[in-house]
Image 1 (cartoon, rainbow over the protein chains, first blue to last red):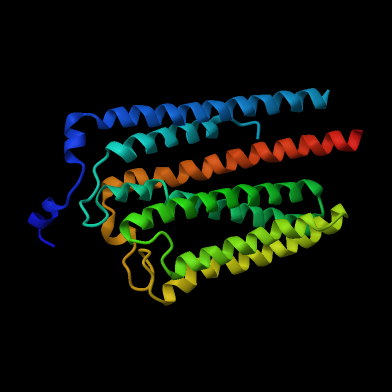
Image 2: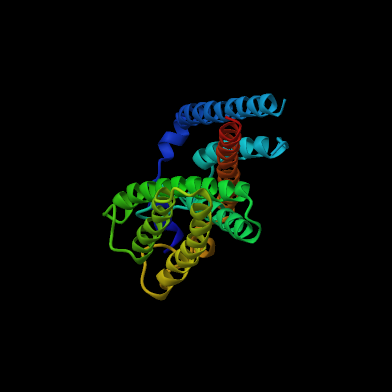
Length: 55
Length: 221
């Protein structure tokens, strides 16, 4: 396929040009950060239990 | 499990993957269009599943060698999380396939192989559920786990390559690594794989620790 044809392939170029893509990036990042923070908090709880049981 | 740095590494890589998976440059491919970004999220599920299955296998072999209950717990929980990753990979794959191949579940050798493989693995849990005696349960399921792994790998990696498959890298289809993925994509794809493997190991480790605590409590009651 020639380069010209490749430029015809429809992509979300306008979405990117608007900068609206960053809205999506922000939302997804918050979700991921939230889930990771939750994992860390579960991790801490398990550690606490382990310490208590060892006593 | 006391070391924490790899958890931060997992978190950082995951965040990096999500951000650059959305804003990074991707090749312009007809039909795939922007959905090529699914490579960053669908494929790592399978890599995560494989890594966890290998860990599960290692601990099953360890259990058979020395009979430590702890190793059995490791094997089960790794397999548990591996199945979760497999199911997620399966669902995401069928959504992606629906819009690019025109069918959520085309009769593709790789999909059928994975269906069979996941069923073989679910039998592992059915088998475990059917024993009262803990030792017998652990020993037989460890043996079955080795069998499950030994049948899963050729099903998914070898058989689809012998015939025609829609999946890249199978049956004469070029793999993503060769033609479709450029260096921009690789910069996100490889970290994504590592990130999801680490997250999988992390979740498994939590499950293992909870299970061990539970066992400890039951022994002391």
